[in-house]
Amino acid sequence: MTKNPIPCTVIDDSFSRSGCKIVLTEIAGELPSGIAKGGTPVVRTFDKSAIAVVDKDFDCVIAPVDLAAVDHFARRIIDGDPRARTESGGIMLLASAFIALLLVGSEERPNPTSTEAV
Image (cartoon, rainbow, N blue to C red; front, side, top):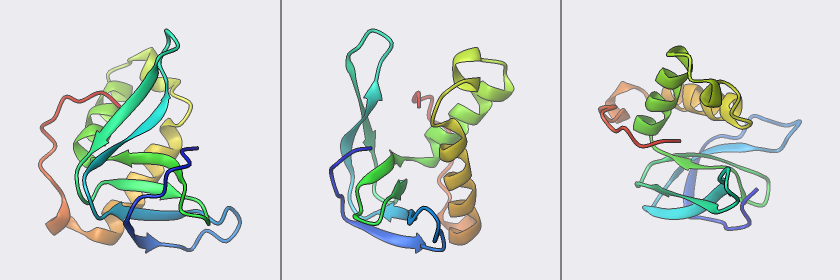
C-alpha cells in the first residue's frame, strides 16, 4: 500500500467490508507501485483520470493506472504470459478497471494503444 494520498474523485464507495473506494485521479503524476524482481522500486506514472483503489484514509491500495496499461496487462494474460497470470495485484487491478468502465461509460474511455507494462 502506498502511503501517499493523491487528489482524486470517488466513483464507487460501496465496499463496506474493506472500506476501499474506486477513484479517478484529478492530476497526472507518479507513485511507487511495488518492487521489481531485482529488488529495485517500481514507479508507475499516470495521467489525469487514471483508475486507483484507495483505503478509507485515501492511501493507495492499487496505484493509479491508465486504461491503456490495463488493456495491455489483460492482453498479456490472454496471450499466456506467465508473469502476468501470476501478478499478485492483477485480479484487484482488473476488477477495479472493470467497475470503473461500467460507472464512467464509454465516452471517458481512452484509446488503448499504449504498450506500457503494468
